[in-house]
Image (cartoon, rainbow, N blue to C red; front, side, top):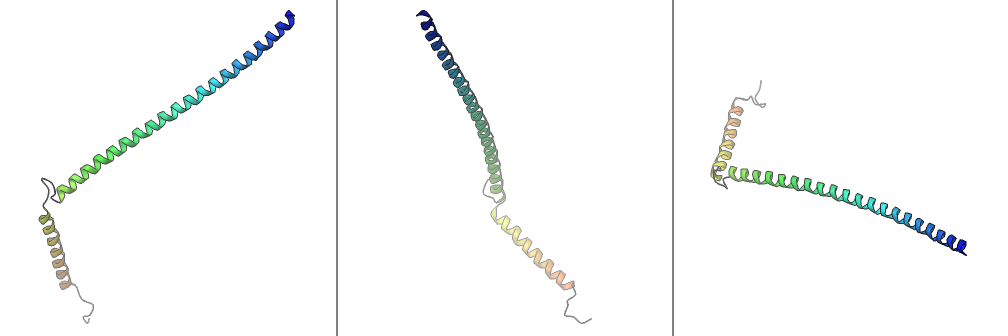
Length: 114
């Protein structure tokens, strides 16, 4: 009887060892998955940090451009006033009109006989 009992114990011992090996295998798989998830989260955090930095830089650049535009159009302190900008545009238009008239005066016309 003792030999049959030893065989049963050996069988149980082998089954326990197999189950233990299966559990170790599952544990290694779970550790691998956990490590992959951690690496993916770190990559995503890095990408989010880079995106945040890019948007922050864009926001600063946009604010600086807005400030410069408001100064150029006289909306903020130290900027060119609106009437001055309109005056520059009108003077440029009148100057181009005078230049066109002077050039037309000296330019030979196509309707005159040779």
